[in-house]
Each structure stands twice: as C-alpha cells, then as structure tokens.
Amino acid sequence: MATLRLCALVALPDTSAVTLDVPAGVTAALRAPARLGTALARAVVGLTPPVDGKVLVSDRDVTALPPNRRRIGYVPAGGALLPHLTVRRNIAYGWRRRERVRDVVDDWTATVVDRLELAPTLDLRPHLLSEAQRFRVALARAAACLPEVLVVDLPSAVVRGGRLADLVDRLTPADTPGAAVLVCTADPTVASDVAVAVEVAA
Image 1: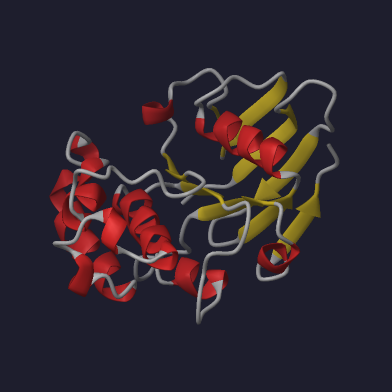
Image 2 (image 1 turned 180 degrees about the vertical axis):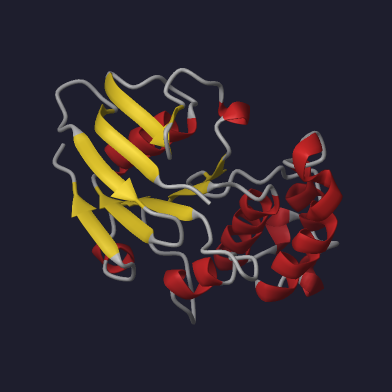
C-alpha cells in the first residue's frame, strides 16, 4: 500500500496551498468549504488539473497522469451512481475494464458487499435506496478496484447509525494496512470522526 502526498497543492486560485501526508491505513480529513473541498478531491484524483503543487502516491508523481493510471479510488459528492444500473452493476462498473485486478476482484467485491451490508440491495436501483445506502454503494464501487488511495468527497455527513471511520475500516483487505484515505468535507462532525483533520481556508 502507498502514502498519499499532497505537496503545496492549490486546487482553486487564491486559496491556501495544502501540504499533507496520508500513510497507508490512515484516514485524514481536509475540512474546507464545499466548493473548495470538491475542487481538492477532483485535483487529487485527476479530474481537474491543480493550479499549483503536486500529488504523489508514495514516490510516484501522478499530477499529470489521467485518473485511470493513478490507482486512486474516488467517491464523489452524492455518490454519482448510475441511475439506470442496479446496485450490483454500479459496484462492478469501475473494475471490469481493469485487467490488473480481475483475478482477485470478484472475491474482494463480494467481501466488500458483505461488510457494507449491501447484499439485500444488489438488485435495486439507486432511487430506491436511502442516502446512507447510496453512499455505501459508492464506497463499495471505489473499494472494489483495490485502490492504493481512496478519496471521499463528503461535504456533509450521510452516515446514519454508524461512524465513517467504521465504514472505512471495513474496506481493508486482510493482512494489509489498507489504503490511504482522504476525506474532503465541510462538516466538522465528519472531520472529528477521523484520525487526522486539517482545516483549509478558502
């Protein structure tokens, strides 16, 4: 597993640079206004270029790489589930074209579905789920790809009857430290639920 390193990363003009190391198995939160938090998340995963700074996965500089070459899983704000697909097909959507994980991903996906208590929902479509269930499906989709880093854009808390840290712990394969997890949030209750929290001024 890898360490996520943000090196003086600036996601939007005239905002503070972010420098942060998130080791494997650690969950860190960047607390920032929703627009800035989303911009930071998108810059880390490669959907938009940063204004300045670098994104490293261990010693690999991934700043200029496309998202599919970064080995970073992404849970966008709201989950961004495909409404015409069932939960089962939403979870499978991200990994079917990734050859490097096909040999192990079926068993691991089944494990994630079980750990996140999604089995009863597999044949449902997203509009039939609660907000918290949709979030778990988006987590499962990102974790099924066995990413080295997981980025969660979570402007406000959606976890009901449980803690975000508990859900993240369920995404760790046996005998590994787990992915480095970065949560971008505007909600102080989300930030207080993780091991490391850093506030970013707009």
